[in-house]
Length: 246
Image (cartoon, rainbow, N blue to C red; front, side):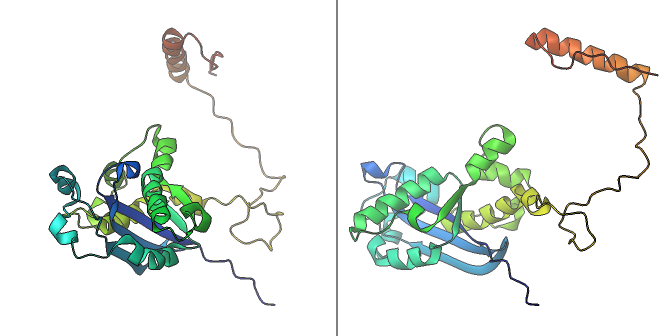
């Protein structure tokens, strides 16, 4: 019997560098960096391009990404690379840190080409790791902070800042911060021996009962003291019951 193969998940980890913060005020993309992952593993494929923004950048902006006006002067215009860029990302799930920024610039550039090009959401899905960091940590974290937290800062040489370098770093961060999604399986099994190891393993209903471990007097008092602190600070606690010791 032929086993149906699970379709491969294609992720494109993406970052851009720009002339500023607001495309509505004339800011443009000057660099795009992408790396490809299949089933959460880097494939070695990437897309990287520098772009002539057709405007003079202020030194303050140049200090951020290190790309000078002279360096970008002979680089292609966005409309000259747009189709190869769209072909690379089409049908993928884009992983971006602060996607609102990058996708906003991408859609602005697509519209400026004036060839009735689709917008990003028309050809890709988007996952924002800034939003994931807010959900995980209670507040958004920068890419540098996440890389440090997950211990992956040293995996990429960031002597020079750039879109491709940041995309590579984000790939490692994304794998670490979403690792639990790859280890937890919510597909229900039927408890039979024919299930794979990914199925839920159901315990024998005739198994011995679990031992009940009661709190010690010291643990019980510690619980009462902690609840008193919570009550004082918040005016309410849902754990009102006293822990009974033997």
